[in-house]
Image 1 (cartoon, rainbow, N blue to C red):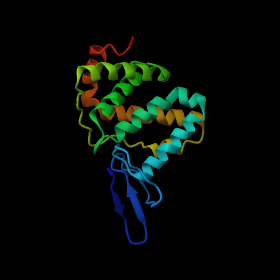
Image 2 (cartoon, rainbow, N blue to C red; image 1 turned 90 degrees about the horizontal axis):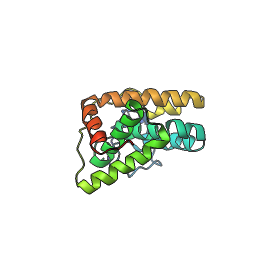
Image 3 (cartoon, rainbow, N blue to C red; image 1 turned 30 degrees about the vertical axis):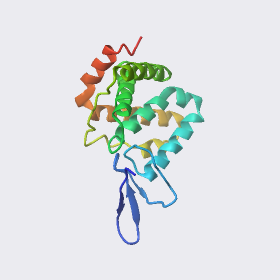
Image 4 (tube, rainbow, N blue to C red; image 1 turned 120 degrees about the vertical axis):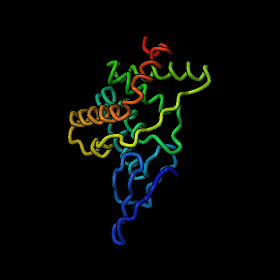
Length: 181
């Protein structure tokens, strides 16, 4: 499992997410078995945020794609596959640089995946050491849907900025594979 648990002291057990460094109380009941570089406790907060977005059509339409891409890239590493990292980088590029509306990003990403899968190999991008100060916990703590959307936008921009070394390569990839029509 790509996570680490840090024991703070005998009395207090704290889990530290290896992706975003979020500290949460350790829980033996929370489980995560995926490939993101995350702690089970951080993943649990992420699933709560996703549930909130799925239950609010406005939030879903405005920021759900940004939430998914920002979380994936902030938690890249470990067993996280090159294809996933590339797809989420393109997602942030489309949302934040090209202004593609959130609901239209998924079809663009499918087109990219089909074209690169046919070509045979995905580019590999190494995650930056620092991936922003905001975390999924900041999103979860938003009091209103409007605050939620604003925190996701700020977080997404921060995560995207942390990957600045690959912005040019991602822009070239989008053009080369005619991702946006």
